[in-house]
Amino acid sequence: MQLIDKSVIAGKRSGRLALNNSMKWAFFLCTTVGLVVLVTLIVDTLMDAVGYLDWDFLTSFSSARVESAGFYGAVIGSLWLMVVTVPAAIFLSVATALYLEEYAPKNRLTDFIKINVSNLAGVPSVVFGLLGLAIFVRAMAMGNSVLAAGLTLALMILPVIVVSSQEAIRSVPSSVREASIGMGATKWQTVSRIILPAAIPGIITGIILAISRAIGETAPLVVIGVPTTLLVTPDGVLDSFQAMPMQIYAWIKMPQEEFQYLAAAGIIVLLAILLLMNSVAIFIRYKFSQRY
Amino acid sequence: MVNIMTKEKNTVTRAAGTTVVEDRFRDSAADDGIREPVFKTNNFNLWYGDNHALQDINLTFNQNEISAIIGPSGCGKSTFVKALNRMVELVPVVRTEGEILYLENNIFDRKMTVEELRTKVGMVFQKPNPFPKSIYDNVAYGPRVHGIRKKKVLDEVVEKSLRDAAIWEEVKDRLNENAYGLSGGQQQRVCIARALATEPDVILMDEPTSALDPVSTTKVEDLMHELKKDYSLIVVTHNMQQAARVSDTTSFFYQGYVVEHDDTKIIFENPRDQRTEDYVSGRFG
Image (tube, rainbow over all chains, first blue to last red; front, side, top):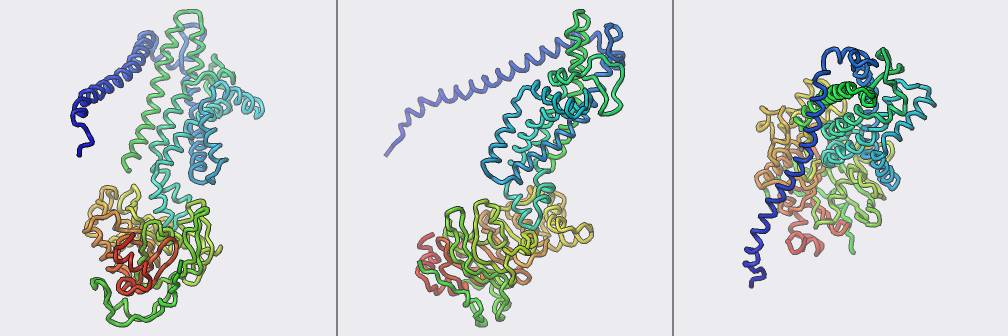
């Protein structure tokens, strides 16, 4: 008995293959749209920046005069900012993710918290700025210091790292957890020796995305009141500082056309530093992926 | 349902020269008299939420014996071995009642920590589950988590464990390679070596050969036979021939009850319960 009509199958075959092929091209086209926009943006910025991007630009402080204005204070300030933001964010987020995935009792409260952590990732950055202003700048009297801004940005990127770390921790197979626990290892030994090393590549992916967002973020810094004109670099985390996105924003607002080119140069420097930081992270991720 | 409790049967001295279904693994060591119980359960009950998964289990397992646990899927045999080292409690909704005595100590007593219990009662799992680390680091993991740091001691433990697990010759030149690069059968023997490295008293095996090919299965079965000189083994198996080949005693679990527990020879040749006979002769399950 034949349930399947072979002629129907033959008739459908060319359609299936055509769809298969066109899907590939559709996906390729979508990828191209993003790429073209990105390349245009970078090339356009580079063209604007090219005459202004020199050693003086990197070593001079900000100035109201185009010819002497530089990016030095902003670069150093942003690096200081990352020194506070990155460790604080990584430590808090990974610990939170570990608690939620490995330690917290499996109940509705935990589920509720997990959902809300993901929702937190969607809160506009300016809201985090207001939070930082109220808590760090005012209530804890840190002023517009590196510490206040760094912690604000850390809170802002926390949900991104928490969610990606949760995902990475969850993807460690439970069979290796059981193997470790079954040998009399404690929970912490299992977490530190088995789960974290296996989850690190995924966690780092989250960290890369988060840092990329933090280093270019402007709105919270505006709310906190980060200065755009400052002729010193900070000596410690309690000092006032400049930041790259703030400086770029300030230049773009200037009426003189030359400042637009300075802003372009600033954007290129910001992108370069971001790329440098990310390559370090990608290298670490690669090192860990090798072992698994 | 009739629940035949046969714990008193364990203390019966086995006649010298007993032959069971298959003789390949019999040796005199299995027949030299009364052994000390290593595990003894008293009216042990376990629930997954409302599901009464294990009901009034009264069993005794002796030292230096291989005890097989057989039964159809879902009969509670895996749950039972996982209760012996309290791994079953990783499932949040589990509730237990009754006692499990490990060398006379109730494992649910507060003075016995789960870490201590699991150090003495090792486990080999159904699917090979090596850590994503080198072969050396896999085997050294247990000693390391218990605080052994000296390289020389670790080296010796790793070699001895791998030798005991009958895989040393295959991996001695690639100890620093990732254990994931081994075949399934080799991985499982590395996992057995890993369990041996903590020098436990008892090794629980939850269907240790179900994911292996016949050649690897034979190797692991040979290995079990070697291991019982130094360890007590409690082995869950789906494979009745395996139970008949390797074990000294067999417990038949059915729907959460122990239907019959006796010398393997009796279970396979002259069972007292009709259901046992039906199961071992392949009429259901």
